[in-house]
Image (cartoon, rainbow, N blue to C red; front, side):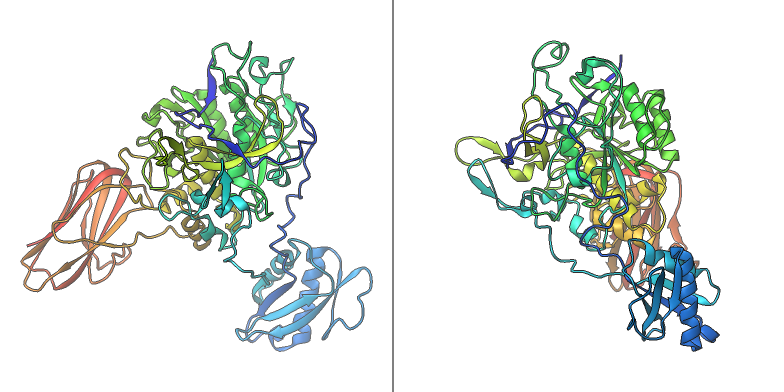
Length: 634
């Protein structure tokens, strides 16, 4: 029987310590805690008020553009259609209280750019301003109609104490505890994404793991119904009877006493699913605990791992259900996930039934993110990371290097912070420091749930939820839901170049939330920034996937006899392009200097070159790894 184990231990996700225990115990320690208090999925976060005005621009020359009253009447008609109520135009202000049963519509001002700002006599609920604008936009006389968005300070960081610290751990004070979110070398630049109003709002992320426990930093972001438990075997579930049950609650996965010790080393409960969930979407800005990558996303907890692990067959069914598919004997999922995170795995090839489940989820529009594994092996040996149609995530440390435990290889898509920094503290011993861990929500219980807590783990299990959170940020700002293949392309194309060349390939770079969100908003893959190189300088270990590339610039002095450009080595297929005086534009028909051939051996020679700057672009026809580039002036 094929089973799955968590990526943990020195090989995967080691528990460093638990700190910051809350003084009050959980309201319930029964196998299924009561459903937590939640916000409705369509309720905007408190820090993002709903728009209360619209801006409409009637086309120049139209009667409605010249006649304010006629234009206002058209807005009233659209309002009545969108809100399914009576709406009336009000010439100037709402001097008289509006009668019950209708919405008053009044002009506010005409903008310098020509649009008219329109207000309403009652407070608009979430989405109503957008609905009115959409109704207006169908009118051929309307040039544009949009909700009047609310701007707020983008520079205020979360007030969660663990976000920057100081936090006291074992008598020592630490800062930058959650540097994985913002460190310029090894972090994901989550603040850069938040500054663009990306929060994960409206996005559901399914966490297929050990389930979650009740926690004040999680409860507010859990979907109604709190997920499902898919473990069918009592050996793994710990229940007295087989079968699946409502609620994705983590009742503990300890393996201390029989029968749980059969085939498993004794260990305490990990609370692994709670830790993963907290990284993705812990409640943020509440002055408690940690900050999360996508603080306004909703969590769908699905229990697929218990004592000693879980069957892949249960995990496959959970993938189908979480993405909105039908599973016999299980009620329909009322909150299908836009993203699935699986920080789990085992050795071997991808099972056919697992591949089918993943393919079905992707076909429904769900992006599947999987941890690469922590065995320091080629990821081709780790499943479901080696399945097709997933985003496989390796682990880097805050220095940007590959984490020593992380699986690697050409199947890895991208890296993200997973922890792993070990230092000697100078006191005669060595200790794990906060910056070497990924800190998140757990529980203090050694076996069954006791009190909410926070703890530090390392592993690709911790790297994957960073990427799942970035996907949620992207989907929250996308004009329309992005297909999984497009999400993967944007994640890889926007990844930040490793500050230190990895000793083994671990994907396109370090996942970058700011760059991914920017690319999503612009609907344009980022272009590589040119790096200046000198004559004869050898640039090594270049890796890129389709949509990415590398750019360079080299200066030629007066009187140069020749300049040569070449790419070589590595694997994959790279094309070489050259332009003089300006960056390479692939759409410029006059730019003809190129070397397009199968493989990585590109060569271009320019005799008697002009004095000035030559620009280079290397683009993959298919992904390249370990490529070398060199330009020489003679």
